[in-house]
Image (cartoon, rainbow, N blue to C red):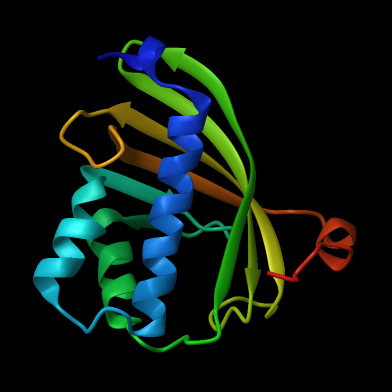
Length: 154
């Protein structure tokens, strides 16, 4: 399989699936278990994965995965809603995608309710649950006027 076989629906499903796993983890469901975490969350990230947060801080794979792991059960009210997933480019086994991420009851963000646009670089990888492996994510805050009028009813 190469990127020309990857559908927009498959990409959107992977984005939603990973974010739903984050929600479950932060809510404390399942129980804190390193094997579960490594299999369901960490394994989706490439060994060279990195993320740029909306505030401009770059975190390597081990740094972000440690933060997520340590956040287990600490945000039971936290909600994420991903919207407007788009395939921006295909090139060999690489796809570039974008999506909006809306957060409600965000504990570690400047605002409890916030929205960001994320651009993600993914690689086709048939060994992954949805056939995609995360290489890099770059998040940027949506403009304040859009965040203020956003729908946080989810």
